[in-house]
Image 1: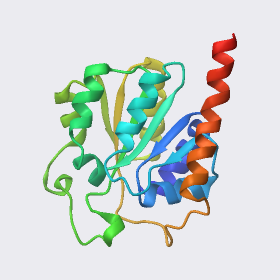
Image 2: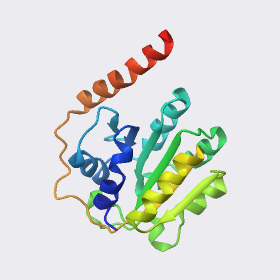
Image 3: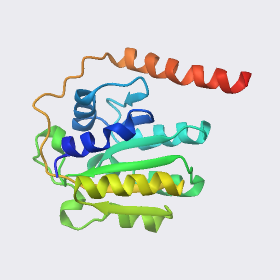
Length: 195
């Protein structure tokens, strides 16, 4: 399965949600499908998309939050699983695209998942209540829908080929994305407080 085709299959479900991505190929491919004001691309902070997404999910439990991550990023911050499991935000789905390499640096380095480390098993062992490993777009969409319906902290590992976009360029400045995302969250907060 290609990450781009997997993202395309999930895109109708992602567009209305709060989405936080890791750095590298995933944000470039998601952006190519159509940017939404609720999408936040965590550039230059490898391993921290899950931490940012967790913070949003905990502070805004009424919002559905999705983290789009990669195996290399998650392996840099394995403690994220224990922290997520401790707080168990029911509104958080963590999707990890596992291509078994550090794609953004030219596929020259394999990750621990290439030699047997199982991210879904690690998440389950840390206490994440709902985990799955998928290998097709259909399995991914089904696992995502089941996670949302269960309203329970979930980690979905999607095994993908080590193929990235021809360009990692996103025509959206980091600060513009930050302020747009902040403005997107603010009206919802103001509406909640006035209601």
